[in-house]
Image (cartoon, rainbow, N blue to C red; front, top):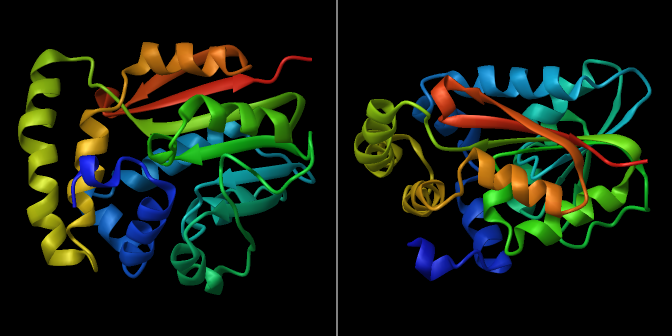
Length: 229
């Protein structure tokens, strides 16, 4: 299963995630050496959900991050287009909605903030998705995107691209329910724009105050922005 074969086709990507739903959270923890918890925590702190706020967790998967956001007292909705992922997270007793990120089933300004962890690169149209997120967030509301990015240190960048990402598929075969899907995931990371380019895309999509900070040497970047008043 290659990136070219999927071509970010919504149905194909949804089917892929349905296929990896079983054991998905465990696989992510193994492949990231436990750093996925740190990245979720950094996202939560950047989003800073407050009691009684309405938060959308988009591409929420099984709702791991949604559950962490909810501990703040905010009303959080987990949205994902993979029914398999949502079903795998039913035990968390969250508000879960099957949703296409390009056509969200929510009213204008329905949320105080939106977060998306490791899902933006899977959208068929990145800018359209970011515009749709802006639509459902109130003026002054917050956006946080946690996504794989480009390591800033040259030796780390070379090691990451040439060694770490190439090791993903064989490692996935030992722990994942659908290891072939991780070939696509690794290729999508390699093809993803760097921090500055993604920031420019976010700004073009109707967000202001766009900034980012690197996590784990730039392997992951945390972009944040606000919807203009």
